[in-house]
Amino acid sequence: MLQMPMNSDRETAALLQKVYTYGFAIDDVILYLDTHPDDCEARAYYKRMRDAYQDACQEYNEKVGPLTIMDVDVSSWWNWVEGPWPWEGGAC
Image (cartoon, rainbow, N blue to C red; front, side, top):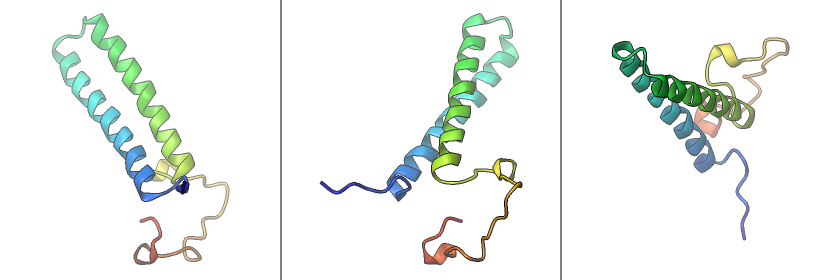
Protein backbone atom coordinates (compact mmCIF):
# COMPACT_ATOMS: atom_id res chain seq x y z
CA MET A 1 0.00 0.00 0.00
CA LEU A 2 1.28 3.46 -0.92
CA GLN A 3 2.13 5.65 2.06
CA MET A 4 1.45 9.34 1.41
CA PRO A 5 3.95 11.84 2.84
CA MET A 6 2.94 13.71 5.98
CA ASN A 7 2.53 17.03 4.16
CA SER A 8 0.45 15.74 1.26
CA ASP A 9 -2.25 18.00 -0.13
CA ARG A 10 -4.93 15.82 1.43
CA GLU A 11 -3.40 15.92 4.91
CA THR A 12 -2.63 19.63 4.64
CA ALA A 13 -6.27 20.28 3.73
CA ALA A 14 -7.47 18.09 6.61
CA LEU A 15 -5.25 19.91 9.11
CA LEU A 16 -6.39 23.29 7.83
CA GLN A 17 -10.02 22.15 8.03
CA LYS A 18 -9.49 21.31 11.71
CA VAL A 19 -8.14 24.81 12.31
CA TYR A 20 -11.14 26.35 10.50
CA THR A 21 -13.64 24.13 12.33
CA TYR A 22 -12.35 24.93 15.81
CA GLY A 23 -11.97 28.60 14.89
CA PHE A 24 -15.59 28.74 13.77
CA ALA A 25 -16.74 27.00 16.96
CA ILE A 26 -14.85 29.60 19.02
CA ASP A 27 -16.39 32.50 17.09
CA ASP A 28 -19.84 30.98 17.43
CA VAL A 29 -19.66 30.37 21.18
CA ILE A 30 -18.19 33.85 21.76
CA LEU A 31 -21.26 35.36 20.12
CA TYR A 32 -23.46 33.22 22.35
CA LEU A 33 -21.49 34.20 25.45
CA ASP A 34 -22.02 37.88 24.59
CA THR A 35 -25.69 37.40 25.45
CA HIS A 36 -25.35 34.54 27.96
CA PRO A 37 -22.22 35.35 30.00
CA ASP A 38 -23.26 33.21 32.97
CA ASP A 39 -23.69 29.97 31.00
CA CYS A 40 -21.10 27.69 32.60
CA GLU A 41 -21.52 24.96 29.98
CA ALA A 42 -20.85 27.44 27.18
CA ARG A 43 -17.75 28.74 28.95
CA ALA A 44 -16.48 25.17 29.40
CA TYR A 45 -17.21 24.50 25.71
CA TYR A 46 -15.26 27.65 24.79
CA LYS A 47 -12.26 26.45 26.79
CA ARG A 48 -12.36 23.01 25.11
CA MET A 49 -12.61 24.56 21.65
CA ARG A 50 -9.84 27.06 22.42
CA ASP A 51 -7.53 24.25 23.54
CA ALA A 52 -8.44 22.15 20.48
CA TYR A 53 -7.84 25.18 18.23
CA GLN A 54 -4.42 25.80 19.75
CA ASP A 55 -3.53 22.12 19.36
CA ALA A 56 -4.70 22.13 15.72
CA CYS A 57 -2.67 25.27 14.98
CA GLN A 58 0.41 23.77 16.60
CA GLU A 59 0.01 20.53 14.65
CA TYR A 60 -0.37 22.50 11.39
CA ASN A 61 2.70 24.61 12.20
CA GLU A 62 4.79 21.51 12.91
CA LYS A 63 3.70 19.49 9.88
CA VAL A 64 3.09 22.15 7.23
CA GLY A 65 4.44 25.53 8.28
CA PRO A 66 3.41 28.74 9.98
CA LEU A 67 -0.22 29.87 9.68
CA THR A 68 0.52 33.48 10.59
CA ILE A 69 3.57 35.70 10.87
CA MET A 70 3.34 35.27 14.64
CA ASP A 71 4.13 31.56 14.19
CA VAL A 72 7.42 32.17 12.36
CA ASP A 73 10.61 31.31 14.24
CA VAL A 74 12.68 34.47 13.86
CA SER A 75 15.70 32.97 15.61
CA SER A 76 16.75 31.27 12.38
CA TRP A 77 16.92 32.43 8.78
CA TRP A 78 14.12 31.71 6.40
CA ASN A 79 15.55 31.01 2.95
CA TRP A 80 12.32 31.43 1.03
CA VAL A 81 14.15 32.20 -2.20
CA GLU A 82 15.87 28.81 -2.15
CA GLY A 83 12.65 26.77 -1.94
CA PRO A 84 10.13 26.07 -4.69
CA TRP A 85 7.80 28.89 -5.69
CA PRO A 86 4.03 28.37 -5.37
CA TRP A 87 3.66 27.60 -9.08
CA GLU A 88 6.43 25.02 -8.70
CA GLY A 89 4.53 23.17 -5.99
CA GLY A 90 5.75 25.12 -2.96
CA ALA A 91 3.48 26.39 -0.21
CA CYS A 92 2.21 29.90 -0.58
